[in-house]
Every structure is written in structure tokens, then in C-alpha cells.
Length: 282
Image 1 (cartoon, helix red, strand yellow):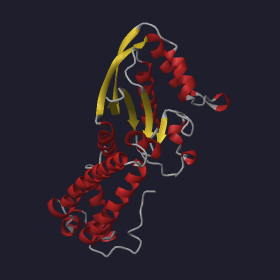
Image 2 (spheres, helix red, strand yellow):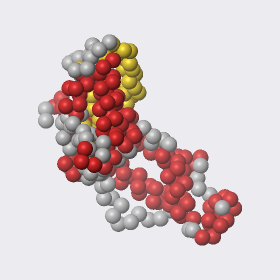
Image 3 (cartoon, one colour):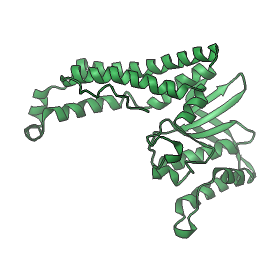
Image 4 (tube, one colour):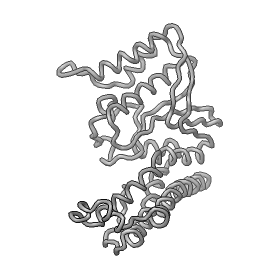
């Protein structure tokens, strides 16, 4: 890794750390200072619950509810700071406008309907390259269309435009269908408005891409082979350069150790277990 790349990865590591630390500090301030769990309030408002279940269980749910909101869209925020360091330009929720042939639009719905409704021995399997080639060949009268991208990167140095549908590691079927329709539309626009469009999952709980087995997105994509699918390291290294994924994992686990210890001691009021320092992301 040359000096320039090392410097870039250091900036990316700091950007990742800053985003997560800022959100975690906001959560900690809320649960410790502005909105703490008060057992007397809990016992008076839910006496039956308090009589049957230890306070600590509800203290944990109190934390969870105050954790989820600040971390909404965290994957997009992390992707944006990484991409800005690497490409100098990245937008969340970018509206991309263009025109698509009328027959291409019809073929998009045809492809999606076949994937959704095929059953038994006639079940249609997703095949990105074949589907996209069929859709692009449709053409026809150009119809105005717009697509909202989760992440949009424009590298002005190479004049390359990337669009991403970025979903959590275990997306549902409806989310995935909508994402695939968006990718088809982006790549069917004439004249071309994006160079690449991807369905991306920022983390793979199964380890290797070949081992990914969450069934819902598999109805719409060949998650192991479609060129439009990026999982884990493929996504981070594309938007940030080689080494970004390992950088990401390292920074999150370092922060995790720090905040897990604080949560045990400051919020739960107990000593951390012996294994609390173990990294969670791999």
C-alpha cells in the first residue's frame, strides 16, 4: 500500500470513527442524563410488569428504544463519509432523472412479475445480465422517469457515476423488489445517467458471499453470482478502495469495546463479563 493510499485509509478510518462515536455519544447522553431509566417511575406505571420481571430487563429495552432512532440510516451515513474521502463526492437520497423507453419500462415490470409469481417447476430464477440485456433492448418512446438512490457517487476525476441501493444485511422481499426495479430503471435510462448501479449489503452475517443464505432477497437476485450484488467487503472496498472493509471492521470493534464497557458500568451498573472485549464484527 503506497503512502497516498495509507493516508486515504487513515482519513477513512477517522471518518468512520467520528460518525459512530458522535451517534453513540448522543445515545449515552440521553440514557444517562436527559432521559434515564428511573425504576420508581417504571414500577408505578407498570406495577404488574415490575412484579413479574426484573427491572434490568426493562432497563435494557429503555436503552434499545433510545438507541434505534439516532442510528437510523447509519449504513448510509457511514457509506457517505467513506465515499467522500475516496471520491470527494457522495449524496444520500439523490434524485436521478432521465428518460426510459416505453417498451423497456414494460419489460421491467414483466421481469419483476415473472420473478414474483413463478412457482414450482416453472419457477423463474433471477439472472441479472440476461434480464438487463432484455430490458435495454426494449427501447420505444422515451418516457420521463426519476429514481431516488440511497447512495450516489460521482467521481469527477474519472467522470464515473455510481448508484447504490443500500440495505441492511437481512433485507425483506418487498425492499429488494423495489431496489431491483430502481436499478433496472437507472441502467435503462437514455441517454446514460449512471455508469454502474448496485444492490449492496454492507455486512454479511454468514461470512463468505458464497455462504450468504438469507432467502428473501434471493427471490429477486442471484445473491452469489449477479454482478449487480455487492456484499460486505465488495461494497466497502469499491467505494473506499482496497483495505476499507478491514478498516471498517477494526474501527467498529475498537469503538464497540469502549462503549460496551461504558454501558455495563455506567448504564447497567454492573461489571462487564470477561468476554466483553471480543470483537463482534468479523
